[in-house]
Image 1 (tube, helix red, strand yellow):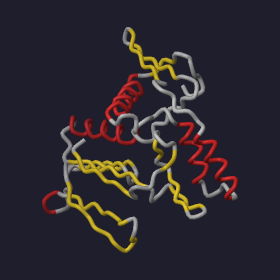
Image 2 (cartoon, rainbow, N blue to C red):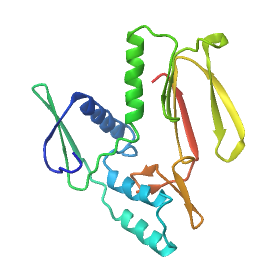
Image 3 (cartoon, rainbow, N blue to C red):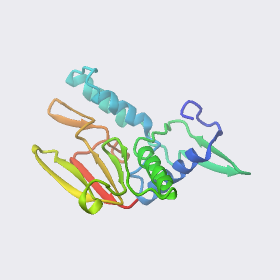
Image 4 (cartoon, rainbow, N blue to C red):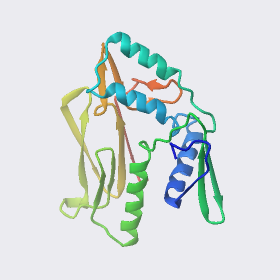
Length: 207
C-alpha cells in the first residue's frame, strides 16, 4: 500500500477494520492519533537509532527537514464494495500501524479465548499491550503487574489486576539523548516531533 500511492488497493477485512478504527481514533483525538505520518516517524526512528552518528549541525538540519514533511489531510480513503475492501492513500502518506496493531490483535486473541470459555490466561503484546484473564496460581486469581518509575530505577510498584487490560506508552525504551535533548518514537502529528510533557502513561481498562 505504502509503495502504491493514488492506487486503489484491495485488502483483507482484518486490515480494513484496523484502518477504519484508526481513522475513528483520529477523529476522536482531533488529529493527535494519525497513522498516516509514517514518513515523519521513519525519520525520527533514524535519529533515535544509536547506530547513526550526527553532529549537532547535521541533527538540526535533519530535524528542519522533518518539519517540512507535510501531514496530508484526509490522506486515507477506505471503501467497501460488494464484500470487498479497498484502501487508497495520497502522495505523502505512509501508513504506520505501530500505535494500534499490537493492542488490536491482542484484543482479538482475548475475544477468542473468551469464546472458548477460557478463564486462566494472560496475553503479552510485549511490555506495552497486556491483557489479563485470571491467575490460577494466586489467591484472588489476580496478577501482580509491576511498574518502574522512569525517573528513578529503584522506585518500583505494582497493581493487582484480573479480567482487564494494561496499555503503556512512553519514552523509556525507544529513545536517545542528543546534545542535551531527549528524542523518542512517540511523534505528535501536530508538531511533527516528539513531545516531552510526560515520560510514561499507563491506562488500565477492560478494552
